[in-house]
Image (cartoon, rainbow, N blue to C red; front, side, top):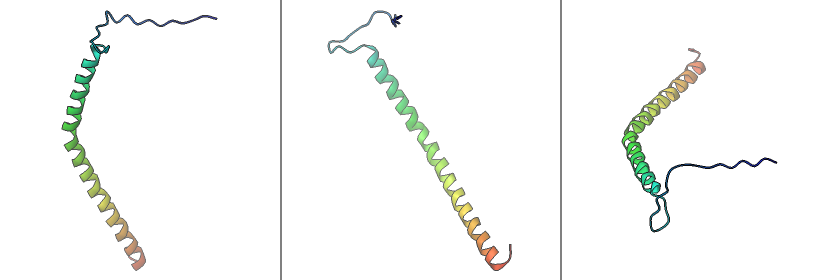
Length: 75
């Protein structure tokens, strides 16, 4: 049976005193940047949800008006 061995040549690994790679610091910085960008985009999401809420209300009113018209024999 053939055995596959994966190796990763990422250069020398630099460890801090607690044994974690220095890349972890870069990961934390990148995640902080992503959180900031998501926070900046949230007002747009709130506007979209508000617009979609108005559309839902309008559609509900139109459906009610259609039922009333059918009962009265107008539609």
